[in-house]
Amino acid sequence: MKRAILALADGAVFEGASFGAEGEATGEAVFNTSMTGYQEILTDPSYVGQMVCMTYPEQGNYGVNRADEESARPHATGFIVRHFAGEPSSFRAERSLDAYLKAHGIVGIHGVDTRRLTRHLRTAGAQMAVISTSGSAAALVDRARSLPGMEGQDLASRISTKSAYAWTERGADAWEAEGRRPVEAARFHVVAYDWGLKRAMLRLLAEAGCRVTVVPSATTAAEALALAPDGVFLTNGPGDPAAVVGAQAAVAGLLGRVPVFGICLGHQILALAVGARTFKLKFGHRGANQPVQELATGKVDITCQNHGFAVDDRELGRRARVTHRNLNDGTVEGIEVLDAPAFSVQYHPEASPGPHDARQLFGRFVRMMERR
Image 1 (cartoon, rainbow, N blue to C red):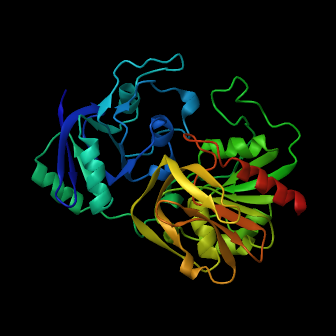
Image 2 (cartoon, rainbow, N blue to C red):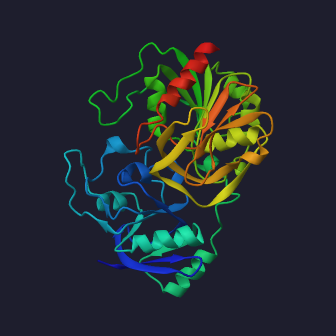
Image 3 (cartoon, rainbow, N blue to C red):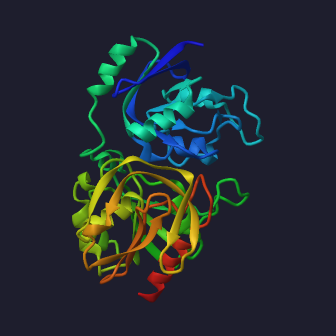
């Protein structure tokens, strides 16, 4: 195995061996606490500009397949693991994780003490980093220090679809025998803003009886309303929510005109549209085991999350209220607009990967459209 180095901007260096593609990868080093779901994580567009460290030590043991992809290709810039399985063992496997990373040019490093790295990122914070199969550690640290951070970056517009398209494929889970059924007699038309969406979200909307039109990030409120939607869906995505060009104005123009449901980046942009602010978390929430409490009922869901920014509830004002909080650190996990039919959550109710505790939120959105 060829030697590889992971160098962080604060000077920390981790040595390991190369797998996947050889070369150099740059991005913000973050960690994910999910035990499974590495392919869904790699193909989640919210990871644009980031290198993911998996805290669970064994990765690649069940291989990869086309059905589990959340987008057309991996978006994480690098992959950091303790150990990967060279020979996967699963009837669903089409190829190995190593072969998949090579095919898509994703640089990986294994043999890293991922427990030490996770503790370091938890203490020092997520930061820019470099993985390389060549060069000195000192030079790579300098390279990491020269990289721009995530704050102020509009990554969502960069990866959004360039033109609108229709989505009609339903089936909540990719592995189900009928997981690719078309929508039959859709009751509602939903316009979905693509800020880095995951396919599972669209499938669950279709499963709930919706015909979905996906539109580019730059779509104005007037353009979205011209499509005559029964509701508007705000998707997840990467980067700084406050930097997404035109997003706040578009959502502000939709409020009160049509029901709105937002997830992750969509949640943050909805909050910005009603006057709140967002801020960058020290190391973010990434994993499939985050406890979230619904304040009205006390009910706790175990949720899937992937975000590095959060909503500052001190700036919500009178237009919205907090509905959910993270039980680990108390950050805002959901809001409801008081003067318009609109709500959002910071976590991922579609899971993929993760528990299905919160999937009922798609039903809540449908009921909101029914009342309208």
